[in-house]
Length: 362
Image (cartoon, rainbow, N blue to C red; front, top):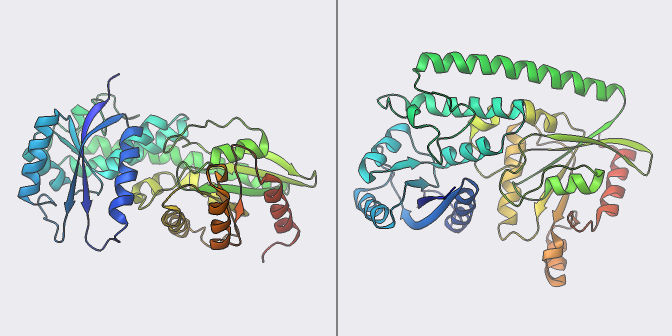
């Protein structure tokens, strides 16, 4: 299937750090690729005072309209979140669909969902996102299934009104409630068996699934793309044959992760909040390592897991020079330098876990 041509609009929003533009550009390029798009053009748009009607100003809209026409782009994708009114007005101004950052992330989640739980969570997040966008835009749902930002588990004949969508959301909430209760029973059973629960967390594409596979011999799906894992996988392992450990691979975090996604994936994220210990995996080769570390820590705080004991694991050290590895170790002295793919540093990680189990933090 040919990729959709995308005109990417990188907005420098007010109050953001200087590094935001560069980091956001790299992130949006990867998100667009993960959603099946081809970036045909990139437009930077510094905005000091966002317009309530379009967010960006008329001159920039005219440039986008011209570039969309010249590149024959199918849609414009923004690196920020737009209000329903702003998205609708931008579409009318440039002549193609406008997708914001949350819409793009939801699209990728729809592509990645495999289990029934994952599909239910994604569909609920999508419907909550779409509901306020129905006002005055009766055709928006009929277009679902046509491309980036329009696909998902809920794509079957979505020419529906708000009442039916709310009814569907209610049913999905009931189903998620059952899933949460089932997960809770499983966790209680594990606690009765005195298992240690260790959740592997980190920025998306940091190598969490690869680490789970390396530690336990599991066969978690691994792909070099954002949000390759949506469904948590838990595997039993023993450290030196002494402790039974349940390692759980979790959904990857992201800077400014949409709150609707956090709410929809609450039952999945409870695997993190109920864990005894966390392994925070960072991509040591990323130029945005510190920003990604902060983003994960912010999400952990938001879901109530900010106070958990954490082992920091700097992954993919096989991609670094020895000088870079020494510099990173000095910068993060408590961190472990590992390569999950090459199985480097895993013995030390196990010993560090063993020490935590022997001397738990009260």
